[in-house]
Image (tube, rainbow, N blue to C red; front, side):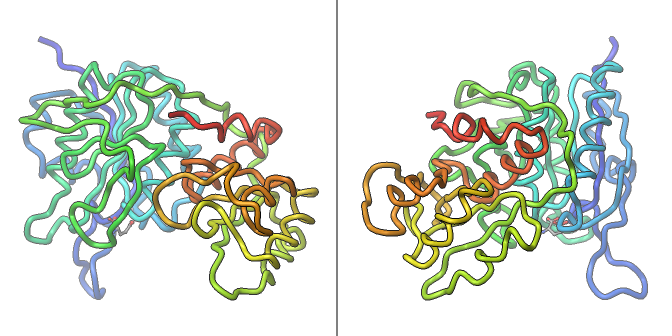
Length: 327
Ligand code: GLU
């Protein structure tokens, strides 16, 4: 019987890290092929085509790397792969997943995974995560669900997943929403139906920047005042509580929103911004009247990714639609 084809792109991260002679600490060094050798069960499930696209910590990936990865993944599916897996560092996985999800038009699953423990640490989780990612990628029920993150036997939607712990093996969660599914005895078991998704074309503009600033107690808006001069094409503010800032910041936002898109989200890590509750200066009603957009349930980091792509596609006029609640 012919086996399905699975394509795996390795980008680096802890899943590929081990100690290196002459270096303190672990470094990315294992290729995709070498990682596969630690997961013997995989070859029974699929014919695997693994390619190492780069070996980097995920903090040093950029949007160009992701657009190249997207081309590669599309080509793999066009050539017959049933699913695509990306292995990368977990530090930026919640951002890369959402970036790719906004651009992934195929029905085939695109699964991102990695590890919290380096390949040479006792109890390394990379091999188990890679096998689980393959089981999810090969499951028919994973089609038309866009990009998903598989870590620690849970399946998370790219839109809501967040790295919530710096070092724990159970670092990934989807606050409020929970995982889309679980891996139970080697099978993907979905707990929720697929949610509605829209995608964007590859961006025409690629050299612009979107700032992300967090509102903090007693801080003057010195950086916010300079974002246009610094060359930013938009700004996201992780605001207090339900999407609030101080009076001083609100005044600057009033000037900025006439020039560039300004999105306000919550810095709390969970929950939605408000739209029609608070009337004080710096509250959401004031910020909306000044031209700012509220991000709803989308985190500040993900709102920044969305705005970067919309500006890149010259479709920032659609921002309000893209931020509309999907619950
Ligand atoms: N904890 C990170 C990881 O899991 C460190 C490095 C990175 O993100 O590449 O991979």
